[in-house]
Structure formats: C-alpha cells, structure tokens
Image 1 (cartoon, one colour):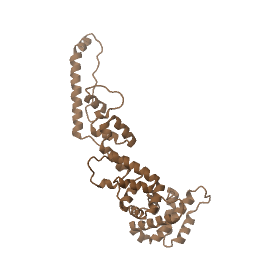
Image 2 (spheres, helix red, strand yellow):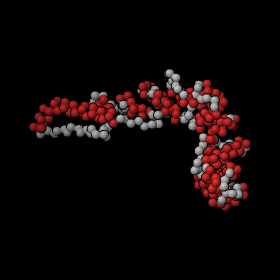
Image 3 (cartoon, helix red, strand yellow):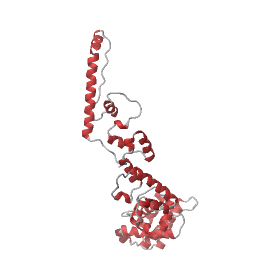
Image 4 (tube, helix red, strand yellow):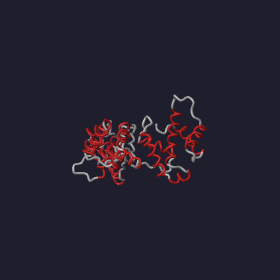
Length: 330
C-alpha cells in the first residue's frame, strides 16, 4: 500500500471545490456591502479603484485555496498541516517516507503517521514474502510492530544466519519449510549476501527451492546468469559451492528454455561449460591486471573445444554480450 498512489474520488473533489466557491462568493458579497459606499465616494472624487481578485474554481484549483476555505479563509505560512487535507491525500504524501521519517511524522500527525496501511506497505515493499502475510491476523495485530520485528530479525541474520531464522520463527513470521524460507530470501533485499551465502551452503534444500523460483524463459544465457547471481551471490573463489550453483543454474536454464535447447543442441553439461567460459571471459575483460585481453576469435576457439555442438555465431554473441555489458557475476 505504501507504494500505491491514492486519488481523491471525483465526488469529494467536486464537493471541496463547491465549498470553496461558496466561501469565496460570501466573502465577495461582504466586501461589496462593507466597501460599497467608500468605493462610490472614491469614484466620485476620481480616486483609483481596486479590482477584486479573480479566483479559479475549476479542476485546477490550488490546494492552498482549498485549505484556506476549510480553515475559514485564514492564511497559513509554512508547511501544510496534513490533518487539514483529506485523509487519502495525507496518506499519499506520507507513503513516500521511509520507516524512520514515518516515525518522526507520527510524532506530529499521530493519526496519519501510525496508519496501518502505511506500515503494511513498508513491510511488504521491504520483505516481499513472509509466512505471516498468508495467515489470519490475530486481534490487536500491528504492522508497525511487525516492521520492527522484521528489521530486528534481519539485523540478527546479518550477524548470525541461524539465529536470525530462529528469531523469525519464534515471532511467527516464518515457518520452517524450505519453500517458505526460499521465498523469504528471494523477495528480501535486507539480508547480507555473505551471510546468505553461508546459510545457503548449509541449507541445500532451501537452495534448491530458491533456484526454482527463477524464471529464465526467453533470456539470453549471460543475462540469465547475471539475474541468477544477483539473487544468489557467487563465491569469491572457485570451489564445490560454485560448482553446485553452476550445475543447478544449468539445469534450471534448460528447463525454462526447452525450445532453445532443442534448436541449439544444448544440454545441462554444455550450459555448464558455457557458464564457466563466461565467468573466465568476464574476469579477462574486466580485470585491470590482465593486459592482453582475450579476442573474440580466441574465445570462440577455446569454447568450441569444450562444447562441440555450439555454433560459432552463438558463442560470438556470448562474447559480444560480455564485452558490451560487463561481468556476469559483478
């Protein structure tokens, strides 16, 4: 909800404009009654006459005029008091704040700053999936309290992954199921990637479910590999964990692209070879320590030695992608 733009209903907007028009018309009549004699006397004496201000009452009416009408015509200097606005408009303005600023706004506008819809939007925009979202919420449930618990759990996870997951489970936020844990990790950007790598290396069942959440349909191989490493960061050194990631990615990529696999004659093993070639090429082209960069012809020749069924054109497109876009695991 925090990311959704609210809009005033046309009927309510029309009512505000009518109130403003009636108020300005009353003021105009009062000014005519009070200053009519003086203006006539001034006209007879040949003095200057002041023109009454003209106000626009159409759909583009200024918000300050609406607020002035609701306050009885009194002027206000400085920031707008959000409580004078329609609730939908006030919530729209506060929906752009982060949690810290929303807490500060709640000290001034308690009714708006503590609105549950705003805190629900903050929770779901930061932690896209939690098991508690899909359950019937108990009486007295507060999304503001849930946000604080999610924030505390994320900080705990970034210090100790196992302790962080246990904290989420103790608060009823997550259930101990690989699919639920994988969805939580996939839709959350507040977890430290180093600690996440340690946790996934220990929980291979969660890693398997996390890989299946990726959809690589109709994606070019280097772009799909970048998307994969964006969620599951590659280790800094080659080892058993990197081999596991490449194997799982290759299987998932072939599953999502059966037509491409048949057309190019690919297999999970061939995709694995291409992935290693792309990683080595990325290092070669982006590292400042490598002076003699690999040419396109050399990359095609080396790759064809390992993957015999892959065409030169396809391998050449792989080289162009790395050369133009950059590292696949950056």
